Length: 201
Image 1 (cartoon, rainbow, N blue to C red):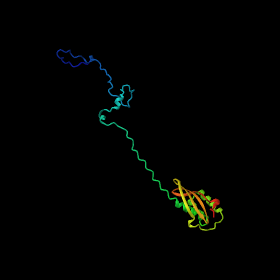
Image 2 (cartoon, rainbow, N blue to C red):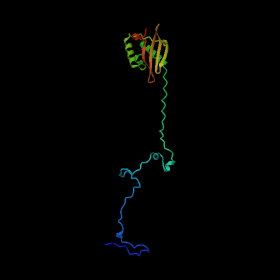
Image 3 (cartoon, one colour):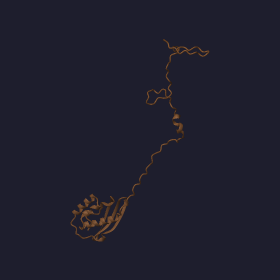
Image 4 (cartoon, rainbow, N blue to C red):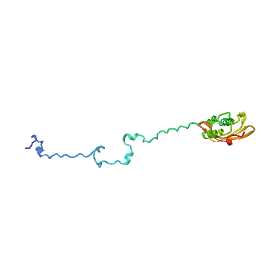
């Protein structure tokens, strides 16, 4: 059974209308790809056109009006200046008091332990052994001018070499000391001029 179109009087000079069955069948054709797929869409990417290198470097559209971007290094923080070095305490008064105290220890007027703060551990042990090994001193107090001269030389920072001339009775002797600055305090690390543990009487 065929469906006929309504009978309509054809226009003058035109053929009459034909039934619908006489029309050709409709065919679905695929549309051409007009846009590339998104990144998450499947596909082998063969339909994508590679972008020339020149186009990658040249901004398009409103980006043309922007200044080219440049990398700015992070701000460099200034290195803090080291704290100023503390001045060395004067060595001459310390050396003079140390030599005077040594004379009083040898005279039996002062215990050797009072020299512990101004001497190294090794030197203190040596002084203690020598003082205890000598004969009992006479107990005569050294005069105020027992330290007749004192020469100080500092060959390096924190190091002092001292040469002192001392008098014990009618005789004069020389004492040499080496002092080092430890924790901002002068400390005697070496002592010469005590043969046999005592100064000449």
